Image 1: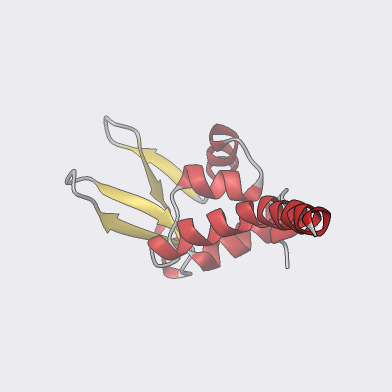
Image 2: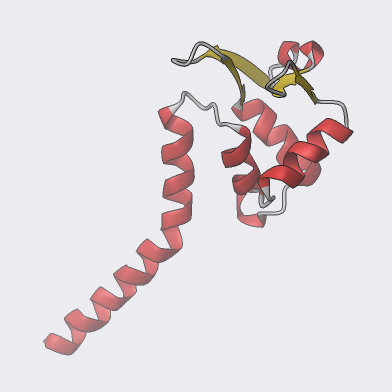
Length: 117
Protein backbone atom coordinates (compact mmCIF):
# COMPACT_ATOMS: atom_id res chain seq x y z
CA UNK A 1 0.00 0.00 0.00
CA UNK A 2 0.81 3.60 0.63
CA UNK A 3 3.56 2.95 3.19
CA UNK A 4 5.37 0.63 0.80
CA UNK A 5 5.32 3.26 -1.97
CA UNK A 6 6.44 5.94 0.47
CA UNK A 7 9.36 3.77 1.61
CA UNK A 8 10.33 2.91 -2.00
CA UNK A 9 10.19 6.60 -2.93
CA UNK A 10 12.47 7.47 0.00
CA UNK A 11 14.97 4.79 -1.03
CA UNK A 12 15.02 6.03 -4.63
CA UNK A 13 15.64 9.59 -3.42
CA UNK A 14 18.65 8.34 -1.42
CA UNK A 15 20.04 6.53 -4.47
CA UNK A 16 19.66 9.68 -6.59
CA UNK A 17 21.35 11.80 -3.93
CA UNK A 18 24.22 9.33 -3.70
CA UNK A 19 24.65 9.10 -7.49
CA UNK A 20 24.28 12.82 -8.26
CA UNK A 21 27.98 13.75 -7.82
CA UNK A 22 29.05 10.87 -10.07
CA UNK A 23 26.49 11.83 -12.70
CA UNK A 24 27.68 15.45 -12.55
CA UNK A 25 31.28 14.29 -12.93
CA UNK A 26 30.53 12.18 -16.00
CA UNK A 27 28.35 14.88 -17.57
CA UNK A 28 31.18 17.42 -17.19
CA UNK A 29 33.75 15.05 -18.65
CA UNK A 30 31.70 13.62 -21.50
CA UNK A 31 30.60 17.07 -22.65
CA UNK A 32 34.18 18.01 -23.50
CA UNK A 33 35.43 14.66 -24.84
CA UNK A 34 37.06 13.91 -21.52
CA UNK A 35 38.70 17.33 -21.16
CA UNK A 36 38.15 19.44 -18.05
CA UNK A 37 39.40 22.86 -17.01
CA UNK A 38 41.60 23.41 -13.96
CA UNK A 39 38.73 24.55 -11.74
CA UNK A 40 36.55 21.50 -12.47
CA UNK A 41 39.50 19.13 -12.19
CA UNK A 42 40.46 20.60 -8.82
CA UNK A 43 36.91 20.08 -7.54
CA UNK A 44 36.79 16.51 -8.86
CA UNK A 45 40.02 15.70 -7.04
CA UNK A 46 38.90 17.42 -3.83
CA UNK A 47 41.08 20.54 -4.04
CA UNK A 48 40.36 24.25 -3.95
CA UNK A 49 41.18 25.56 -7.45
CA UNK A 50 43.90 28.02 -6.36
CA UNK A 51 45.61 25.37 -4.21
CA UNK A 52 45.49 22.83 -7.04
CA UNK A 53 46.99 25.30 -9.53
CA UNK A 54 49.73 26.18 -7.05
CA UNK A 55 50.47 22.48 -6.55
CA UNK A 56 50.79 21.96 -10.32
CA UNK A 57 52.97 25.05 -10.64
CA UNK A 58 55.19 24.17 -7.67
CA UNK A 59 55.78 20.68 -9.10
CA UNK A 60 56.63 22.02 -12.58
CA UNK A 61 53.59 20.94 -14.59
CA UNK A 62 52.31 24.43 -15.46
CA UNK A 63 53.48 28.05 -15.56
CA UNK A 64 51.86 31.44 -16.08
CA UNK A 65 52.64 33.28 -19.29
CA UNK A 66 52.01 36.67 -20.79
CA UNK A 67 50.38 39.82 -19.45
CA UNK A 68 47.15 37.94 -18.67
CA UNK A 69 49.09 35.32 -16.68
CA UNK A 70 47.54 32.54 -18.78
CA UNK A 71 48.09 29.02 -17.45
CA UNK A 72 50.33 27.06 -19.81
CA UNK A 73 51.51 23.47 -19.44
CA UNK A 74 55.14 22.54 -20.00
CA UNK A 75 55.39 20.84 -23.39
CA UNK A 76 56.70 17.53 -22.03
CA UNK A 77 53.38 17.05 -20.18
CA UNK A 78 51.38 17.92 -23.29
CA UNK A 79 53.47 15.27 -25.08
CA UNK A 80 52.67 12.77 -22.30
CA UNK A 81 48.98 13.48 -22.91
CA UNK A 82 48.13 15.13 -19.55
CA UNK A 83 47.05 18.45 -21.10
CA UNK A 84 45.50 19.67 -24.32
CA UNK A 85 45.47 23.23 -25.57
CA UNK A 86 42.25 24.19 -27.32
CA UNK A 87 41.33 27.34 -29.19
CA UNK A 88 38.35 29.04 -27.61
CA UNK A 89 35.69 31.37 -28.99
CA UNK A 90 37.46 34.27 -27.27
CA UNK A 91 40.51 33.73 -29.44
CA UNK A 92 42.74 32.81 -26.50
CA UNK A 93 43.93 29.22 -26.23
CA UNK A 94 42.76 27.37 -23.11
CA UNK A 95 44.69 24.61 -21.38
CA UNK A 96 42.49 21.67 -20.46
CA UNK A 97 43.34 18.53 -18.52
CA UNK A 98 42.80 15.16 -20.23
CA UNK A 99 41.34 12.03 -18.66
CA UNK A 100 44.90 10.64 -18.57
CA UNK A 101 46.11 13.78 -16.78
CA UNK A 102 43.25 13.67 -14.27
CA UNK A 103 43.97 10.03 -13.55
CA UNK A 104 47.68 10.81 -13.08
CA UNK A 105 47.02 13.76 -10.76
CA UNK A 106 44.36 11.78 -8.90
CA UNK A 107 46.91 9.01 -8.21
CA UNK A 108 49.41 11.61 -6.95
CA UNK A 109 47.20 13.99 -5.00
CA UNK A 110 43.50 13.04 -5.25
CA UNK A 111 41.49 13.60 -2.09
CA UNK A 112 38.09 12.34 -3.32
CA UNK A 113 38.42 8.67 -2.46
CA UNK A 114 35.34 7.48 -4.41
CA UNK A 115 36.98 8.50 -7.69
CA UNK A 116 40.21 6.59 -7.01
CA UNK A 117 39.72 3.26 -8.71
